[in-house]
Image 1 (cartoon, helix red, strand yellow):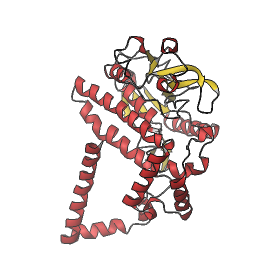
Image 2 (cartoon, one colour):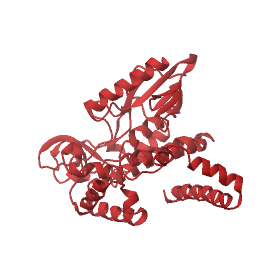
Image 3 (spheres, helix red, strand yellow):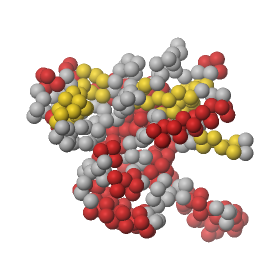
Image 4 (cartoon, one colour):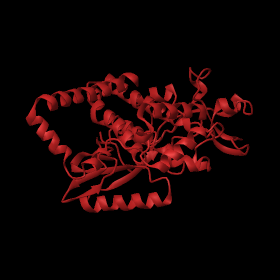
Length: 360
């Protein structure tokens, strides 16, 4: 990622150099630049590019998704091998985002990151509100987990959530994208960074993707129903408004299943379970079957040294209770014999498209 982010930094420096030189030496350019900066609500517009606090996670996520779905897709159009590499890159990035979010569990690494962000950006820009700055100071001292679903570290969630690019929310979106671009359901238009579409003297909230199919058929794809009942109801209302305004039907899709959507935290260590090399290879070669959500590890040549092996069954979880969950096998190998474990590797199967037929 360093090289990719360095290129992004070079693009910013390029634009800054153009602006600095032209503003200092070209009056006509300077006049137009001043008019832009004097526009009403201009300061609010700046917060759509970076803001200190709530909303920043969406900006960081949009930036990453723009790089991939707004620029990098040109790379994928160069040929079959490029497409395979692009799919691998998307899945590796999903793994990267998952392990990045593990700082919700790894408190020492989290503190190092918090200190680095404060030193790099400054506390005043990092958090604009005093209450967020105070909570940030508390977060630096906190050594526990931040997992609201398990009621752990809930007091720090608001501040912590703003530090990462949409937490793991990007992961299912990119996995859905990587699925449809290599299958024959139609042509995919990502709207991940265009969640509000302007026109008709107003705006509507769009689904995450549009799928262009034959005979003029267009289908909207929305990833996930929402993390809570309230969020689900809000999303349903937004999608209904979009469909009524455009006559485009919308399908809610996701990764795994509606009841147990991927990705998963390990029930023991509470860190995220990533996708193994075999699964990434399978997807990049477009050999995964419809609805296939795992592979059997028993015949895998990487079995003996793979860190991604998953046990799905009863074991003692983080709280010491015996529960049927998905676990890193390395976390439960002391209580579950490998020959009895039925080890698997996760595959990002897309749900919600069971009635959608691939086109030949």
